[in-house]
Length: 96
Image (tube, rainbow, N blue to C red; front, top):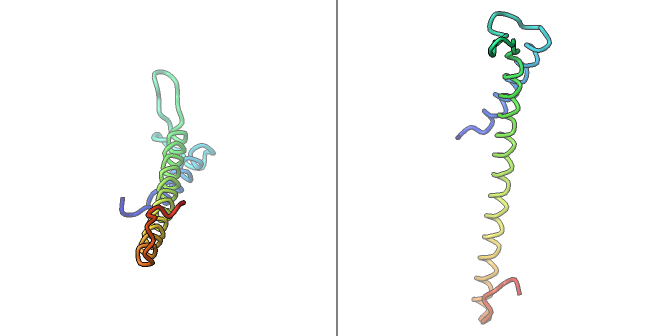
């Protein structure tokens, strides 16, 4: 997804909607779902969607940081190898 902030926005919006439904601030025929003969508040579904979107946002944020770190490590490793080759060293493993 091109807009990772969208996960955060949707997560917060769903959490606010879910809390509003559960606390009774918002009511209507759509705020209650019937599963069989058991009434079920749609607020719980909204909370679940909010938490799901927040987890997706957090995961994408962490993944981007990990990729940036890996890219920096690869560039550093390439620079070490290039400097070693220019100095005429025969060892190609920069970690030893």
